[in-house]
Image (cartoon, rainbow, N blue to C red):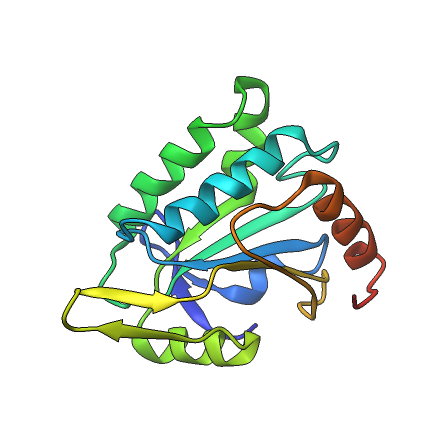
Length: 170
């Protein structure tokens, strides 16, 4: 939680500032991904649209790029796109509660190692090979659930958020 990143406005932020009050959905993607990361983000939006909990009020979302070459400007662009996919009535709280971060290679390595996320840059395709998953962390920053794939049923996320809010590890 002491790792430093940059938020979508380019400001330095400590990861821990997003924890402490409510559960956090954590997604590790890279913003210029031509395929899989977009599907992860789309799957998240589909679930957030129907969750009975309000993003930014009952839970937050932290999306971190694992490509150290990516910039805050790109993170800001992605945030605008994905918050824009939510219904208008959800956008203000989602804008406050969904954070798109970038970081240096050291911070990225530390967070990916800490959560067990593995990836590899493939020179021949100029893309990262990686798994697809999102995680839920307790308000104290302990991982409580992993959801693999690109489809995250709202029912499963709802139950994971409830358990995480109670500091239960799934």
